[in-house]
Image (cartoon, rainbow, N blue to C red; front, side, top):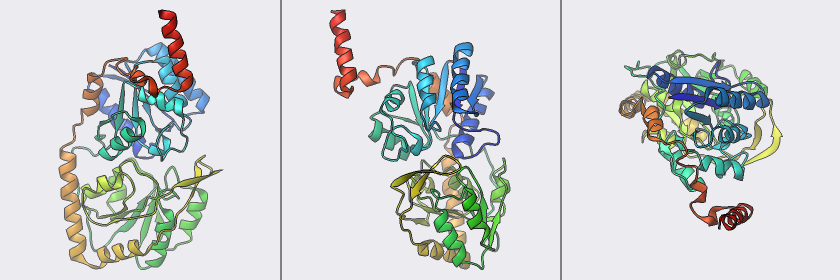
Length: 378
């Protein structure tokens, strides 16, 4: 098969779980003997043009459109140039053109996603969300991002950092900052990511017990010195790949219960309820992301959870062992060839008529156009 991946993201260096997942899927497909290409990066107009040129010149069997496409220009072009051959990779619900978490709802783009030959969700929670919001079933394929193991055990009650990845407003930097301030005797670490702003860096830099860590390709370099992972996310999460990666290595995770994070925690402890973000202002930061209206959240439960883990050896070691066991069972059941098998099961054009399942599902304008065409055929 010829497989073309497109996304509004930079893949060198890769930032974020969606980008890393896409790369892993593409590498597995390439190692299985399939021809794979990417069309991404650069200004939007150039990305769309590059996608069009690749489709017309290379004629891929499947065009994988990642949800990192906030303006939905890529999904439109993919359906225009490769009708019946589009597969939608549903990573980040804020980037979907549909659903209550969407930053940019778009009825036409949502119809295109529904007409895709296939939709892939990275977890059961997200698949249920897609089915409720779009009325279309999604295949659950966990990206084989974790590797084959064996995985090192970094659980260490004695020492290490309390780590946060991609500290920013939507990921709960407000909770992280207050928690670090109230626990000055412990050392915290952060890996800035796609959402971290200059203001976030300044706020973090004012705390003497917070260290900045570099973004690295090998996640073990960051997790090896980690004692506890903190994930106080306040937006609707798709899954939580870093949660699973930490648990695999025996690192206790204190996480919010937002979206798919509960699924990623696999029934382990230290899942903290939060008030999630419900509104965004029409103001954009230096990354062109909308400014969230942050709900009130008390840092006290986070401080209490960390104090328990960091002062009670039995609590730490119990959570470390439970996390490693649950994550190991989960990862051992994953199929690295899941995406290949899914693509082979599809037929080009098979879902092209999804929106025609009932005439009531059409907009009044499209319904009128369909009826007019039927009259002409008669």
